[in-house]
Image 1 (tube, one colour):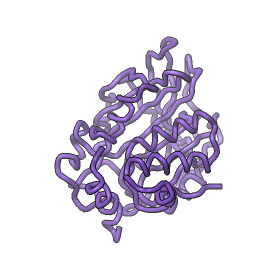
Image 2 (tube, rainbow, N blue to C red):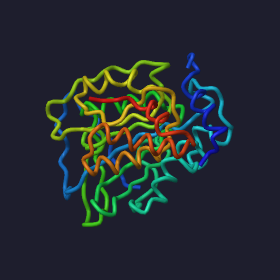
Image 3 (cartoon, one colour):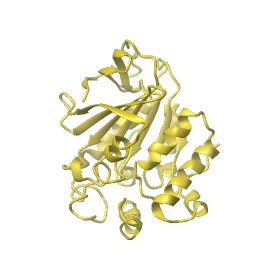
Length: 281
């Protein structure tokens, strides 16, 4: 865990600069595409986009160089550090890693990790995007929210081989990183009427409710956790929220879960941590 003295300035600097593996095949489809065929899927799918922290290209005050290199996932704040996505899920007893590696014809994704939940068999796919590619990362996330982007993935799961849909085919979508919408705009994509499932979504960046709620609404995605203030988007939050989501907890319970995890990590009160996360209906 990064010490509190680093984290608190980091939460501000990341968001206040304005005052602020499995083999995959990318699907380039027309608007409102029909979801590609799936085989052997009997489990939930979670797809997470992580935009690596990058001093050189993102609108942030610089963090220590070693953890702020968006081309180096192994040491990056949001990936290889102790609270990063790779570290949190690799050390979790609830998740088993199935694969790690590159994605065919996707050089902007520096590493893809695939995990399977030990109890409910859910598949979790986490992509580490090059820091300089934060805009296309967020664009793909927003397209996925609306079911306007699909990607097929073949994998060997606990019960055998399967072909599943990522992006718009996931049951749960999440973004982790700097709130790039403070610096650039992404179109709000309309919900695809051909999408087969309800999509839950969480956005772990500073003030995500203010910047992403319109995208979620137009996309027809159900928000389960958004943030109300500047914050540190450690992947321990995603881990905890997924535990509650698997248990079908309501929004207030998920918000409390996130607040408790954040309070423990930051060394603050749960009451104070609760203000970081937006109340949802």
